[in-house]
Length: 319
Length: 253
Image (cartoon, rainbow over all chains, first blue to last red; front, side, top):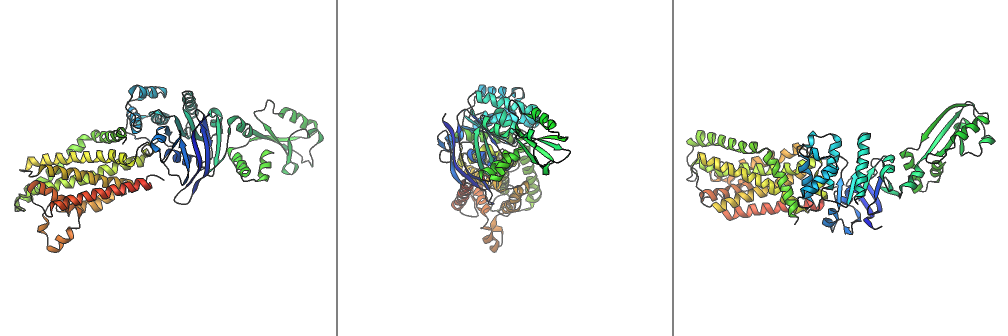
């Protein structure tokens, strides 16, 4: 598939000297949903802002639909819709008017049927004459999406669309994103929720500290991220693993006081039942059992270490 | 030019004006009437004619200038500061529009509002005093240019301001004294010689003088100089705005 958005060696250093982007290169294919996953302050919003023209790049280039976003900013920006992270709406404006405003700002003539379609798609039609200040938080987010869609963009940026929203609204958002993809819109969303990327993305990019560490098909990345650890604490410490347990992917930790078992939650069989049977057969007495999922932070730490060639951290993460 | 975008910004800004129309209309009518009651009737009756013009009529051009300059700055600075404050300036920055189009929309609306208020004051004044306008075209030209140039200045203040206090700072501490000391209510020929010279450094003097000439045919400074001064001021403001958008100062990180 053709790349609708090409980013080459994009760097951004703010006036204070903070380097928010350290040479990001990325191709986004037409019609895909790309999730940019990263902790707060990773550079996600700076990346989006730089592509959209809100922030000026220090160096590098962005090509949108074949148009450079600086020298051909009119053509490039016309293809983009942006849904910001914060709810930034004029409180006294009416829903319909503010969406019409966005369309006009992009130089498109008023098209009431088109605006009606956008408002209906986002369940805002009934609220079209309501003032923004009268809407709930979820409705306001929908208005932001309607504004971004008002000029029929081919690429839609959603900056943390579900940050701080309840579970129900998050599901709604995912549905909306799915419908937009079906209508042919390319979607780039930022998030710090793994499950969000898992639910809706085709590809996932991991960004931290201004570096885009990797971009992978979601399935492959999730397999890597879906690891979990089971810690079996023993009543009596042991010196070495008993023979019966040699076949399991086990580590002896806490000075022999606990067994650490790493398994894949997405695998057909996790092997936990067999392991616990074998532990009992080996005559070991269990004091406690707990499981631990790799947090996003762990994964980032692992990825950063891998990126910098930190072998110890890598083996630790893979263990 | 993306005229649809210009019209969109212009209409949205004007909509804010119409929402508070009554306030926009009544406030200048009331304050002008009060000025005439105080300066025109109460004090004015004890003041001799100034340069052959009845004092009540003499202050009309200055009074219009005072309101138009203050309103232009306040409308334009608030117009661009408000989206900055709310955060929806992102829409303006990410839209396919250049700085001229943004300025045309915001400044055009601010200037229209103050032009409206200037006209309302003129009409109100006509109820209190006999007004003759000797050079109507020049009067309109001065009025429009003043609205435009001070709206441009207001736009710069709105971009510069980091909070509401700063938004009020320049109009309060710089513009109001300049307007009051710019010969709005007196002829600079009434000042001692040294102050006549000092006052020539006040740009508002040239505006008020030119505007008053359009009404009564008399000016403190040559009319051409007045026109050059206001033209130069407009160009200077445009230059600053061009630089702001080129560098992204205070609007684009």
